[in-house]
Image 1 (tube, rainbow, N blue to C red):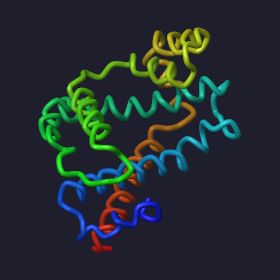
Image 2: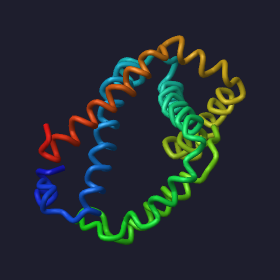
Image 3: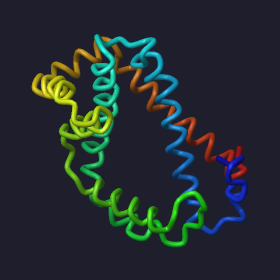
Length: 186
């Protein structure tokens, strides 16, 4: 990111809003890359799938991510209170790769998302985005959801809960390392 946008590399040159955005973006990229390399590729990619099909692998991958969301939602008594904390998070952010309008739309979406109750229907929406209007895929997702929590337990039989916790801890520690490095505290 800093090779493409060197103006973001020195946090001391950024205003507080832009610095906060970059730190959040670093956190997102770190967690995403770690999920891809430690969870998705070893368990759900076409070459290494533990599932019976590519579609089932995608369902399992998304289901584990959604289960982490669900657990976070439970442990924080929902995220609705956090929505008010980002009401002006896009104000003053100065980055070239996202327009102010797009950033504002993103902030509004995140605020709405934080106010929603957790719902497994998100799994259907995610797979519909991946396999646009494919009724066969939707039927597979429907069967997975109809058999909850047994279907999720079947995923945990292949990908133990301990691996998810290892990912979570690694995501936290790697994010902290990246943030400290960016802030010159490493």
